[in-house]
Image (tube, rainbow, N blue to C red; front, side, top):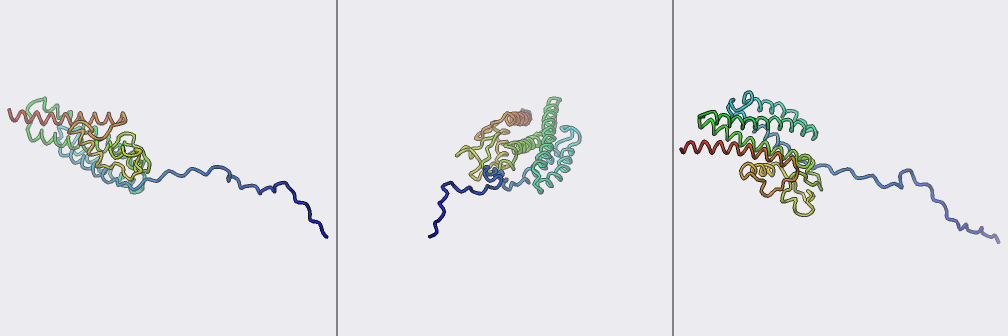
Length: 239
């Protein structure tokens, strides 16, 4: 009878694991932004340039068509960057255009007041200029709010993104993130800007960041100037 060898009580060593298998899994990449239409911003830039072109040369620094010409030139790389998904480049070009338009709108409002203080001004000239400046101011700051809030429209469209500049009522429901499928679009920021130009307050939307508060103060100041000019012309007509 052949006796079997005694079993070894020691555990059998397992083969070594491949390198890196014991480390935690790598973090997941950040969620990619959902498709965000950028054409409203380009259209709004062109409309602001067209509105400023309607203003008399006496209310602009340089010829009245200059802002529109600059926007037309900038709209080419802006469109190309949007189509290619170059959001950083698109945002940089858009902010350059916004700075130019803001300077043009603010200077037009200041020159409008100067024209009113210098003496009698033709009524149609005054009202046309004030109306165009008011509308250009509204769209310019709609674009500012749309671009700065939470890093821009592409960043805001990410799931779980938290707004850092404006708090809309829809984001006050739940955990305050955009994970519910809603995020503010250009129309929402236009509504905020419209309230700032008419009621001189943001109404249902909270202003969170200092830069957003500064921009809204500038917008409201320009709007007050244009409204006061229109009111002064109306009082002068009634008198």
